[in-house]
Length: 206
Image (cartoon, rainbow, N blue to C red):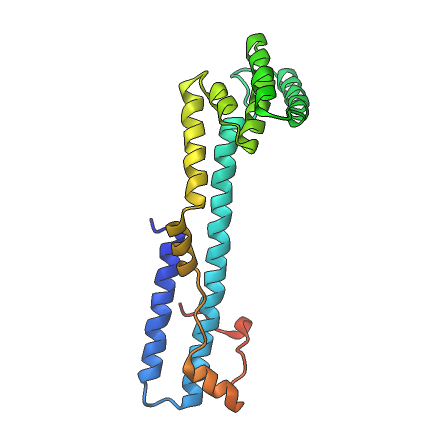
């Protein structure tokens, strides 16, 4: 299955091929060429914009899923509604407490007490605060309690790193770059024989 960047690249390649065919068509006047090219360009750029929005929304959803897997509230199998509500209230209060932690040493002390008393909600809230602040010792202390948590933490860290990867960002920029106005369009527009096409009236052919 093609990813969104591949779809955007294919879309632009198809548009470029159509534009070249128009440019080489000797039966078309300069104005007719400019009009058809403008329609393709506007239609393609609108689809590129939609692909771009879809792509970044997907990235946000992935990041939120990984974050929730590590720091979100989960319930044991068979938990009653009363138990779930109590856990939600405890976690909410724990998040408020964790927000008051001033430094990593304080986080480590509070985390130690939470783990000693079996306060899962508080430990998770402290870990979330540690991740937000970049307190690696506290975060690693929290993750050390299970292999599953360590794996979830590594998945989130890897994904966050990929968001800042220069090559990936360059590829994204290229994939979602808009098609620029052609020489034919510019000439026709400057001469007053071409107006910006209304995309709502363009018949989609791509």
